[in-house]
Every structure is written in structure tokens, then in C-alpha cells.
Picture 1 (cartoon, rainbow, N blue to C red):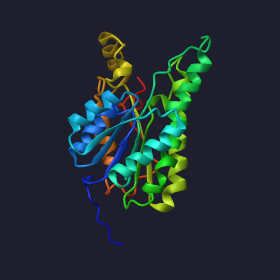
Picture 2 (cartoon, rainbow, N blue to C red):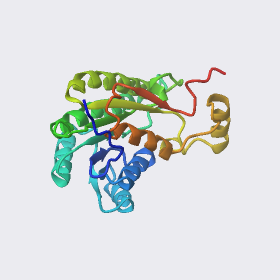
Picture 3 (cartoon, one colour):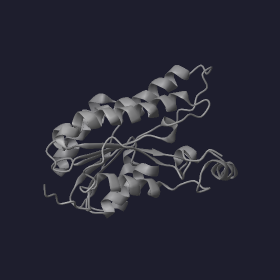
Picture 4 (cartoon, one colour):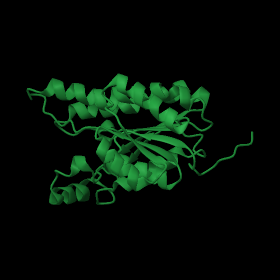
Length: 254
């Protein structure tokens, strides 16, 4: 069998959720810089428009609340119509869900975590499938977390949602593999994003020295480049993978 294993995403259509900031923003900008047509989606349309403007003429902003199933169907269809198809889906949207078991609002935090970071992923995939099936190099990347590989005390809603993403990724990879659609998962560790902005720099430095092999927090762009590698047409025999991008956090015992 002869394959053209292209390392270019030029002309490919990509959807990135949670793209107004952090890893989503870095991923949208990188894909656009590599020549992809990028749908920048997030709750805040103005913020999305700012990212799209920075990304260039091949990027367009779409307001999207991924906890709204009807909105997902509508916006995905709008994106496909605007760009003429869909080749790449990056499920990145997330919310901070740290909540002790005894908290009065635990159930509300739990339900939002699952809605935004797990249910939304499968809804996005199912909404995009008609167009992904028409692509000759369809790629899905789900962004989970090292909290899906281990756990931090007081973080059960987030841990449950992200662990679910790793399982969903494997299940989708098996279901869609016969169609040549790859589905992979990235598990970022400690990254400089909006979610970690509230952590004092001194505490970040101590944590990184104690827990990561590289002794530092990562940058959103470092996660984005791994995502790019997984969505290349050449990444045609990688599916069902769960890849930590964590500076060696999961590798280090002491």
C-alpha cells in the first residue's frame, strides 16, 4: 500500500473549542500559522474574534457554549458550511472544578464538569462526524489532563471528567478506526494557563521542582505542538493513544 504521508495541515479545516485563551488559543494560532482554516470557538465571541484576528484571514470566530447540545449541532453545521467541510476536531474546552466533597455546591460543580469536559466531547464528535467521514485524513484530539491519570485531593469532579475523556478516547478510536478516523488524547500536566493563574508563582516553582522531571511548568504552545503532531495526515497509525505532556510528572516517583 502506497501512502502520501504529508506533514502539512495547509488547507485542512480545524475546529478548536475553548480557543479564546490558554492551550486552545495556542493551538488555534499554531494551526492557522501552519496553513489550516481554523474555527475559533468559545463562550466569549469577542475574545474569539481577537484570537481569529491574530491568527489571520483563514481563522473565523464562533460563539459556542459546549454545555448546550443544540448549540453544538448548530455551530458545527455553520462551521462546515463556512469552510466547506471539517477535517480536524480539537476538544479543548474546560472549566476549573476543584471542589471538596462536603461543599454545598458539589453537585452543581460535578454536573458542570461532566457537561463541559466529557459530555460535550462526544457531542462535538457526533456533530462533526458527517464531515469528518468525508475527509481523507480525519483527526480528533481530546484534551484531558494528568488528573485523568492520577488525582489531586479535593478535585473529584475534574478527575472524574478527565478520566472519562481518556476512556471516551479509546472507545471512539475503536469505533471509528475502521473508517480511518484517528482519535487521540493529550493529558497536560502543570501548564501556565488561566486555570493556574491563581496559583502563586512561588508555589508553582516549588511544585514543579518537587514533582516534574523538567522542574518547571509548561507553556500552552508546548501542548499545541503535540496536538499539531497528532493531526497531521502523516499521523495515520496513531489512535487510541493517551499522551502525557507533563514535563515528566507522571514518570517521577520522588
